[in-house]
Length: 370
Image 1 (tube, rainbow, N blue to C red):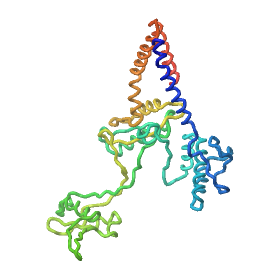
Image 2: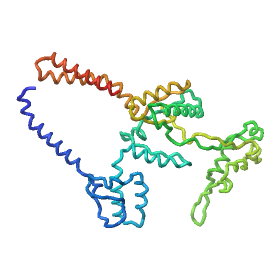
Image 3: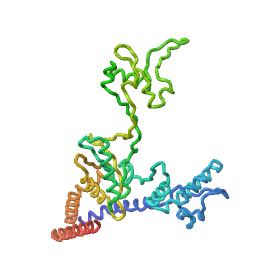
Image 4: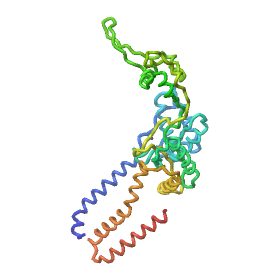
C-alpha cells in the first residue's frame, strides 16, 4: 500500500482504535450485582469487605453455600437482606469454576436413593443441545424394536463410561416406566360376536368420556356426558368389569376375552431422521478434546450389532461439519495473506517463503496440541 494512502486513512484508524479502547474500559467495570446493600446488623453470609472485586471471607467453606443461603432466605427477613445475601452468594460462587460447582452439586445429590439427579453445564452456544459435551443419536435402522435399541444403548454407555477418553455418558430423557397392556384374544372376542370397534368405543367411553346430547334445564341447554364413575376406573383391573354389546345386543364382560398384563416400556418414544432413536450425551475427560470424544464414540458405536446406526446433533454436528472445511479455510487464508502481502512488497518470492513458513508453523502447533 502506498504511504500517501496510509496517511489518508490514519485518522480513521485512530478513531476506531480509540472507540475500542473506551468500549473495553466500559465493559470492564463492576457488574451491578456487586453493589452492596446496607442491612445493618442483620444476619447474612459472612463478609469482610464491600469492595466489588473482593470475594469476602477467604476461610469460608463454599460447600456450605447452598444450605446457608437457603437458611437465610426465609419469610422473616426483609427484602434487602435477601438481596444482599444473594449478592454475596453470587460472589462466593464466582470463586469456583462452573465445573467445580457442578461437581459439588452432583456429589451432594448422589445421596438421593429414590431418583437420579444431576447438574449439567449449559451448552457453549444457546439452542445447540441441552448441556455441554456431545449430542449423540443412536438409531434403530433395522426396526429391531425398543428393547433391542435400549440394550444396544446400555452396551454403548457401559463401554463409553469405561473408556479413558469419555465420562458422564448417559441417556437423555425419562427412564422406562411400568405400563399396562390390555391383551385381547381375537378368537374369543369373535366367538362372542364382539368387534374391535365396540371394544374401543367401550374403553373410550368408560375411561374417557362420550358426548350424548343436549337437554334444556331452566332455560339453558346443558350437555349429557357419559363416563364411568371414579371408583370404577381407578385400577387397571376395573377394565375387566366393563361390559360390551355383541352383535345380538347381549352384554359380554371384558374378562371373557381379555386380560391385563403389566410390562416395562419407554416413557417417551423419540425419533431422529425417520428412525427410532435414543438421545445420548456425554463429555470428554480432562486432557482430551471434543474431537477425541467424537472419535471415541464413533469407534464404540461401530462395535454394536448390525442394524444400529448413529447421527450427531447440536454443536457436535456443527463441529463435524466445520472440521471438513478446515483445509479449504486454511488454503483461503494463505491466499488472502499472499494477496495482501504482495501489495506492499517488491519481492513475491520472499512473501511466498514467509507464507509457507507460517503455514508449517501453524500446522506443527495444531499437531502438538492434538
